[in-house]
Length: 308
Image (tube, rainbow, N blue to C red; front, side, top):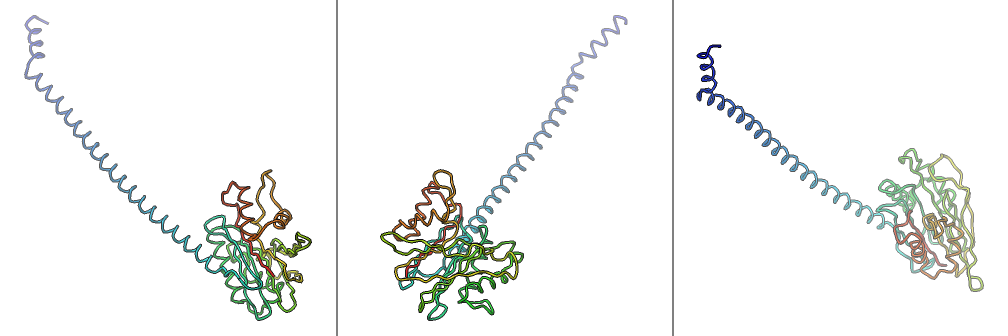
């Protein structure tokens, strides 16, 4: 390259106009990138605000739904309690306690006069907890309260269990079955007839030399209700005397671990009841709650206490 040509190239490279054009081009590119970033940022902010608004809306909806569900559970629990019987100040005197392990449980019970001479007593325990168990429990109690099983002799406990078994097959009850203790007290004879289907025996107490003799009134070989059709249920009878007590219970009154980690038995419950002052049901519940650190018991607690 000749000196003159070299000088011309250097002049062109250092030409202010060219440098300005190059700077303008770079500036336009930077502006374009800035505009793109600004649009992306604005879109991100807008999208984020939309997501936040949607989440806030969902939270409000969730809160309202939860409040409605809790309200409906309270209403259902109140209805379950509303169908329980009044406590009886006349013979046979009746007291009771029901404490569900959850908002709604599967335990329910009742008693009523069948006629002037016969008095029916019943306690049922539907498997599981929650709305489904409570609904089935209420349905069964309403059937018993209304004596609404066609062709049933409600003075015959074995017949009542057999008819209930066919009326409530578990395949038509969302695979739920239940246990029951059903007894009929005849005032004129003092005879208590009873039958149980998969249910703990009732606890009979008779005063004897400063303590109580304990007798279990139950039919331990009875099948749970609803498992198999056309089942026969054995029954029994026992003569009640003045001063006797009868406790009709669910398994939630004793199937809990004691301080040694051992599950209590029916016999241990009966022994405890022999030395427990009235009202028995509240005293026994408080006793069990001590084993469970006063937390809700693992199963529904149901106990009816009758004095003759």
